[in-house]
Image 1 (spheres, rainbow, N blue to C red):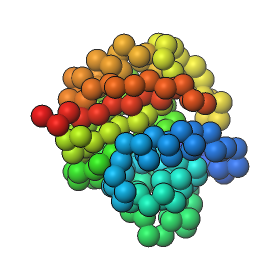
Image 2 (cartoon, helix red, strand yellow):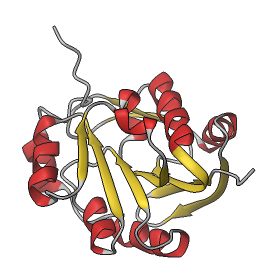
Image 3 (tube, rainbow, N blue to C red):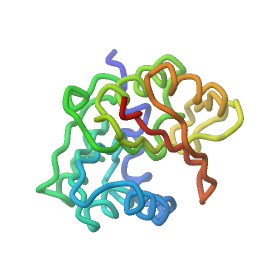
Length: 192
């Protein structure tokens, strides 16, 4: 039996695409405009089909690299954005983390992962950001576990204090937490 690196989302890909709303897109768009130079390289970790996050970033002129472990979701991403870079692989092992990016976004993925995989992804993102680079991700503020509505698998938030610690351990600094349709964590890689 092979391990499902999509955390159950390959099996529910069509249902997910039909249900995915534009929640988060307005905030991500305003965050990117406020923090990133035009044409910045942004890796979208857990890009899904590209709607709505990658779509908003691409519309605003950012160069997006999408990572998703669901072949069906990434196929939809590639059809929608044929000129964008993309990789069908788990975030924990992405080849894109050997490159350097101005920013990383991960909307709706981190809390789907095990605690160890969350730590690994945060560390990988930190290594792939240039000094001054930004990281935006979502997870509840509190430490909690729940059943994902679509996949019925366990999701978990490590909580604000643990995310702050993991970010700092990885060389990032948490500079803001925003509640806009989601709980957003905004971290930056210091210049020195």
